[in-house]
Length: 448
Picture 1 (cartoon, helix red, strand yellow):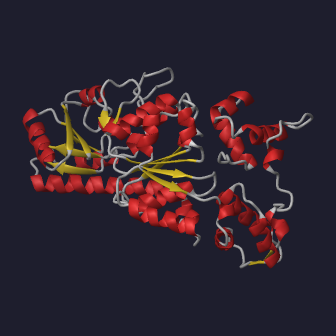
Picture 2 (tube, one colour; picture 1 turned 180 degrees about the vertical axis):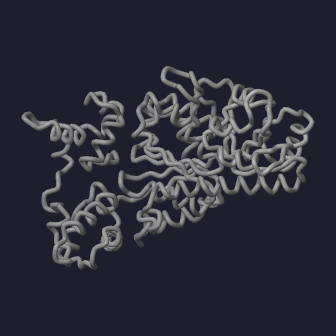
Picture 3 (cartoon, helix red, strand yellow; picture 1 turned 30 degrees about the horizontal axis):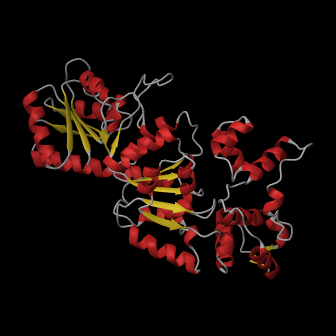
């Protein structure tokens, strides 16, 4: 439901417009001045603001800079080209002169809201250029992937919560995007949040927002990512790393469709479809008291299990060829050939980083290729000397560089410790831990 704020000092006009919009299904709030609106509401939480130009105190156009990008429609009895141009120059999306026809106003409101929704979707699209390609994680014909595709087709048109399980790099985010694109919410944005990449002290503020002065450093009011996904889809990746306090707030979103920003006294309604993903065993985390059981059961309405790349048989070859061509086009290189020896190396390697590791290997091979032929050495993998679980679980050795110690410590302890515990032991933040994982190419592995 779109939320509209009316700022008008004449009660009769304000009430008439409010009733008109209410009858059309909009959630309407009212204020008699910009000051009253700013004091009583979080302006950035509205989808549209209708304001008169001439108001007690500050003019209506002052709300434009206070509303943080919310579209503002200006109403005025003083119709003139000058006032129309001035208000639009200051950032108003459009202008309507009083007295106005009700149908004209409704048409303008509907058009503005539709435009805002399209702009939100475009911003989401621009954030991930890879979306011009097919869903990489769903290429393949093995039985397990065919089952995933079948389930995606069934659950996508619903608003049911989906829990995607699988090792790091198996394509969980791409499957989440496929669910969104095949849903009735496809014209609204999908907001993606990596729970492991946000510091624990900030994650509640990032997800649920905060009011100005809610805590030290909260200099402005901020809309949370859950509210930003209103009407669309919220994808929470690595949800197993979500702190317990944030889990409780998320449960309220799932149960009642409500959020309450930090420092706020009143809750707000949101309409969000939640998709979550993790490589971790949530059931075990529940037993260990690190994950709420009620949230776990709320999340797993529908489960999608993505198989690791090593269990997908000939899909590996199909994916390798697709990713090779994708890298070639992106890098604007000439067509390349992949030798039979290279294909044999690809099939014999376990790919602990799954599709993401394979994609990186193909990109690296295209960059280093000199004779338009992809040879095994360009992949920078050694299928004959992969570390066994016994080797990687040994305690870190002495006389290692900091980078080597970091890598060995992660490999030895990541299956028995949470990201928070690992970061604490290493003396770094969770965000720094995640960034170093990306730098050294060490995805988390699924517990056996």
